[in-house]
Image 1 (tube, rainbow, N blue to C red):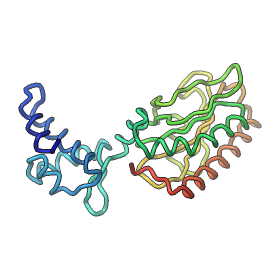
Image 2 (image 1 turned 180 degrees about the vertical axis):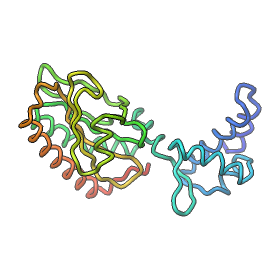
Image 3 (image 1 turned 90 degrees about the vertical axis):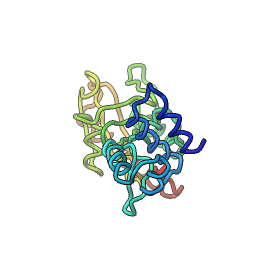
Image 4 (image 1 turned 120 degrees about the vertical axis):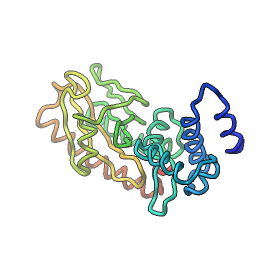
Length: 232
């Protein structure tokens, strides 16, 4: 369906306010084109460049679109994170497949559940996991959305290279340790070890810290070797 047909259909629907329809037209056009400039987006949505830019800036502020140095618009980190929760993004699927063996080994090494999360800077989403073999363990799920404020995930993404530890931040009596994985793309990526707080003694935390750091380095090398990124 062409962008003109989409626009006409949206604007004549009384249930869709005209301004919202125009924003959705712009957003859908950017996603369909994968990368486009302001002129093309404005023409496709039958908007003036000034109005189109205002709408696109609003979408950019919420992370739904991203703008490069050349002024071209593409899918932003928020929509990529949402795609991760729906397992709809091919790049994210490849990321999860690449990371899974490292998560499995990390879970075996630490005895705790491990997770790979992606973040758009506002929230995070688990895209891969390896469950602990212990009877008492933390159980998360792929697609689970996480806060960044006050959590190990948020702290790790805010300070790449450092392992962050938080107790009871998301769930009572649960300790999480996370470290960011340097990757090329729009999303933040981190590995976490999560389990019952009583098993995270100072000695165990130090062992987990080393294991997390080594796993993050190994995953980064694997991603670079495979030429993976998170642009799509």
